[in-house]
Length: 114
Image (cartoon, rainbow, N blue to C red; front, side):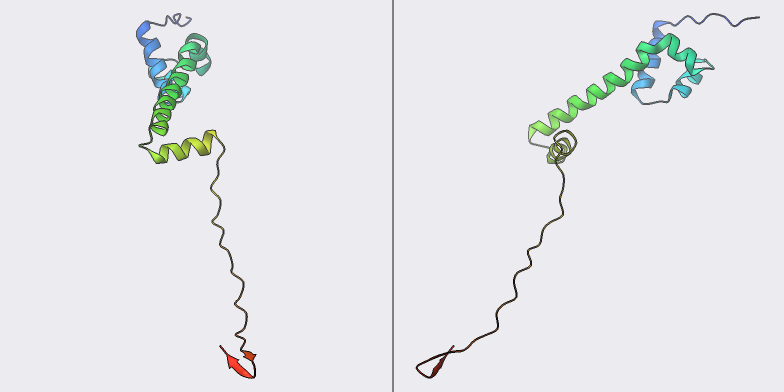
């Protein structure tokens, strides 16, 4: 006897979208909603899987952007600049001073001058 046809409900669509947004692997999402195959999950919930991850990333990006541009979160600003603007931390450059010349005593009119 064949399995009953899958009929996605609005509630299941919301659940799949949320789980996708949280980064739950598709195999686990399928198991949670009672589907054995990730292929079947993708066939019936492709939009929810794609939008869940996209909307989660958009939300986090908006928050990071607000933090980085507020001036109140320097770590967020530095993170944004490194990731988005390509800034890099470079090792500090220490300048090796030239060795001091040897102490020379000058003679002026036969008298040593320090």
